[in-house]
Length: 71
Image 1 (cartoon, rainbow, N blue to C red):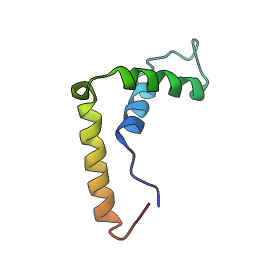
Image 2: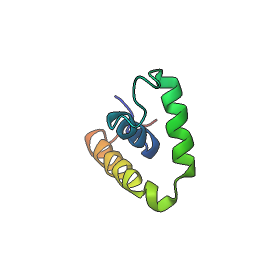
Image 3: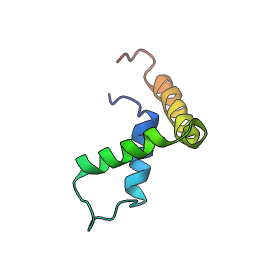
Image 4: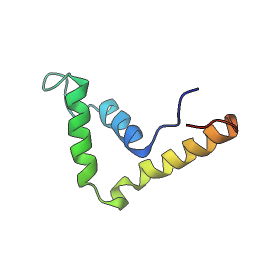
């Protein structure tokens, strides 16, 4: 059973999906994660809030689908 994604992972998925870093500039996902992490750390709590809310919803749905799951 996969764990629910946290706010940063959801942000990173969105970051990659929107192609914030074009493939011709960087296509190594390790470096893309580093770039996304740097941006995430510089964001305010208000800027992070959409992903925090999505993570909470995903966590709630995960708990409903797998009530006894522990990680």
